[in-house]
Each structure stands twice: as C-alpha cells, then as structure tokens.
Length: 237
Image 1 (cartoon, rainbow, N blue to C red):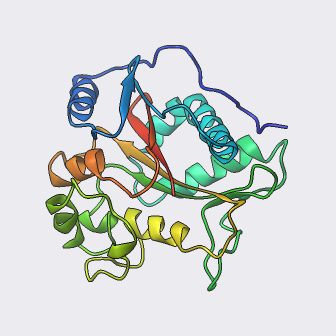
Image 2 (cartoon, helix red, strand yellow; image 1 turned 45 degrees about the vertical axis):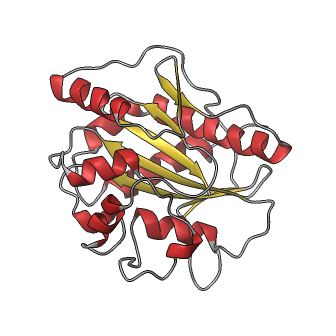
C-alpha cells in the first residue's frame, strides 16, 4: 500500500508577487548542469534499477504531501524557530493516519542519533528535512559560519566523502545532515533522502540564496519542484 497523498498534482502552481517570480527566474537560470529541465519542473532521469523505482516512489509521495500543504507552508516559512517542528507535525498527520510505521524524530541510525523522518515498511526510508526561510544565518548550510564561503568557492565540485571531517563542517546544517544519512548504520534496504525546503522570498538574496540554488552532493540527480512560495529539492544519498 502506498502512503496517503500519492502522486503530484497536475494543476499549475499559483505564483503571486514580483519577488517570487523574480526568484523563480533566477533559480531556473542558475540551476545545476546535472538537473534536467522538463515542462517547467526539474526531474530525474528514467530509473535503471528496482531500488531506484522504490526511491522514486517515496520522492513522489513526498511531492504529493508538499503540494497538498503548499498554501499552509507558505504561511509558516517566515515563522522563525518553529518551521521544521510544524512541518514534522504536518507529516505525521498526513502519512501516519494510514501507515502507523511512519515516524518523526524516533528512528535511530546509530551512535545515539535519530533522523527527522522514517518509514519502517517497504519501501523503507530515512530522511533529514531542512527548512530554510527568512532570518536564517549563514551557518545553516554547514553548521559553521565560514563554511558558507567554502561551499561557495567550490560550487562546481559535488560534496562527498572526502569532505567528511573538514574544519568548515559543524554538527548540524544541510551538509552535516547529508553526512549523517550517508554514514547511518543501516543496510542497503533503506532509502536515504535529504529534503530541502527553501523560501525564495528570504531576505538574504546574496551568497546564501546562491549556494542553496547551486549546491551539489555526490550521488544521483536531485528532484526539485516548485511550490507557492518556494521550492523543495530531494537528494537520494
């Protein structure tokens, strides 16, 4: 059985406000070379294995959730200190109604660490969710303030295992979440997803916004789709 809210909606997203439209054009213009643009959305290539079919199923289910909640999400993106907690609660209400094995902040991945979201039935999944909106500091990317400029300096080079333990890498943030998933003590039956939810109207439209648009991780191409006030990008780690 598939979790509630299966495939993506086909209705065109509603775009309001000049800042949102401008941000949309900037992001599309600056997209990564390894992402394919099709019909206004950034999509993955055709899967070549059963494992990839399963992982794409979870990506589609998450897309269905975000599209169904995009109006509520737009109202919360500017609320500091509560965005991710609110999103976790919405996910529990959406997925757990029919699938009690969906968990938030409970699934252990070793060394007293837990992941943001997990699904313990087939297809098994663990994920980290990072919501970045207005008012976020530069250290939200690597956990260390100077890490933002290090990432900006090497945007054309995907982040991967050689970067583990780098001095510009802190304990939390988008990049540490990637490594937390990559080093999780789980077997190959678990899909690992890094989910970024970004507000395109955030006050910082400089280095932070550019790094968010262009950051790359070692692994398969990410899936990106647009919502009312921002975008969601999902990496398979």
